[in-house]
Length: 206
Image (cartoon, rainbow, N blue to C red; front, side):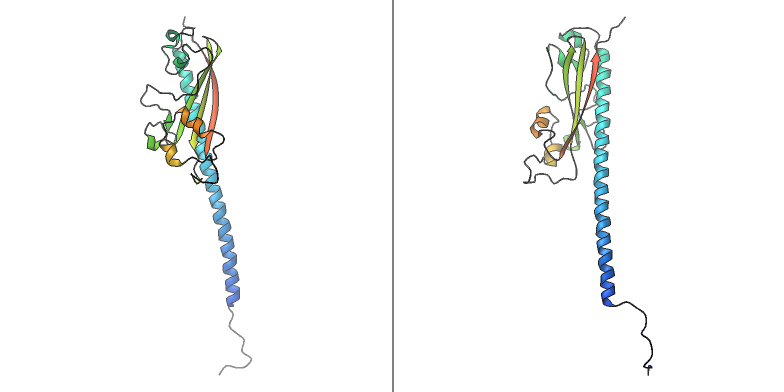
């Protein structure tokens, strides 16, 4: 028989255990929420850095293309040796946005998740368009480059916003300027865009 003065064994009551579980649950939810936010920020940073690299790549392609522009003039013969600047031939002021069509099969207007050139519609995540305008007719031009993409992490097709773009629509798009204009870049909440510009001049060969 136990003595009346014997002390109880140390331990936790049910209430104490429930309180501890509640505190751990709240803490875990906070950590999960923070992890989700960090993952989203990392994904957005990756997309932005990839789009920047793609845009810079196209600026370099345009500058490379300008090396074939060896004659002043507005006519097609002056720009015939170029792949992209030839769009300015016969144009008095500027072109509309257009999808560039590289003759090199290893180059493209579309890019996959990792920024690799691709023309497979199902693999395209980033699209590039160009717009050309004369600074000095026949001798110097400005080239605008835009790269746009469907931003991950958003629910497409939501009825709460009229400008949502479905991811399936984007991946099936042909990267045409009409597609970008139809999405009203800057207004669609799940489409991002980066712009860059460069100036090129004809190359005098001696």
